Amino acid sequence: MRPVIADLRASKIREVANAGIGRDDVLAFWFGESDEVTPAAIREAAAESLARGETFYAHNLGLLELREAIAGYAASLHPVVGVERIAVTSSGVNALMIAMQLLVGAGDEVVAVVPLWPNLTAQPAILGAEVTRVPLKAQAGAWRLDLQRVLDAVTSKTRVLLLNAPNNPTGWTLTRDEQQALLDHCRRTGTWIVADEVYERLYFEGPCAPSFLDIATAQDRLIVAHSFSKSFLMTGWRLGWLVVPPDLLDATGKLIEFNTSCAPVFVQRAGLAALAGADASVPKLVAHLRECRDTLLAGLQTVPGVQVQTPLGGMYAFFRVEGQDDSLAFAKRLVRDVGLGLAPGAAFGPEAEGWLRWCFASKDLQRLPAGVARLRGALGL
Ligand SMILES: Cc1ncc(COP(=O)(O)O)c(C=O)c1O
Picture 1 (cartoon, rainbow, N blue to C red):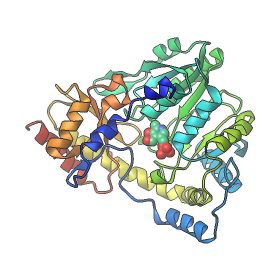
Picture 2: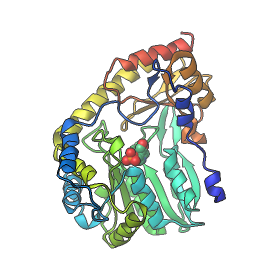
Picture 3: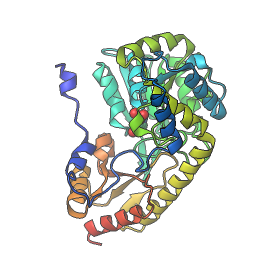
Picture 4: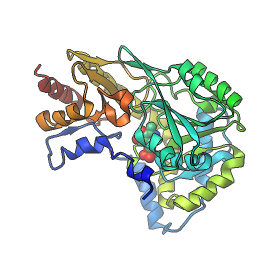
């Protein structure tokens, strides 16, 4: 095995979740998904596709119908994104891996703004790239971009600047001015921007978070990764897409061939149904998530010693508890002693040590105060 593979760390979130295996009394908020099932219309579209016998390979880039629907959906949120820039992938994580395979190889430098969902930094590392971590600044519980630090880190030697905003785990979101400054800088250094915008719709300040697609041209060195998982409650379906410059589309199709060859047709049909219903379903989902967020935050803010800020996007509260500096040990203790399942900050990098991530996407709002009560119990309050 290549040493870089041997060195990959198993997920610390799984490590905590494994401590709760076999217990049905755990209130679990550790994984990045809602506990709500995919809407019926989406499931029915997949079932109908299977009933029609759509069980064969499809085009590498996805069904043209779906690519057109994605382009239409993107154009409803951003300036026009032509279908000649869209590739359907088998999940957001697969989209991101393909983006990395397109751009980086052994020895290339990737600058990543962290803390970050660990898959994003593992992918370039698997390909042999060197990942330089540039931390966000935590100020009174809120995470902010240290713009100058990123600008200093990205030089003409930097192949890729990797960003995820709205961010998992911190909820931090890029401002338009920050995006513009980063884009201008990367144009000067010739650096590619890989923007993970899978949470763009889970945004509480407007219909969509600021996107690089709003300010970049089709010719810019920009790849944007998307997913059906979060906005359409489709985590188990494994469907996503990439927006690439038009002259990278053929190469993207080649890489899809060698990774998965194509996304399953019945899953793509489900994706079409999801997009057809997006105007109604996404605002409803976000309204519910806002209630979840506000309910959880109201509870957490009453716990003495808890430091937390309201996230602007995503579906996570990221917080720390005074005196609890070992997040993995604390998260394991919460499971063991009070049946509360949270993700340890350390899972997202050393910058997030001492923090905990709480996924508030809960169908039943009451699970959230019940979880806060367990946290209080664990702290002897
Ligand atoms: C930041 C981020 N990017 C991408 C993904 C990938 O989502 P999926 O592979 O389910 O489409 C996730 C999932 O948790 C995520 O948090």
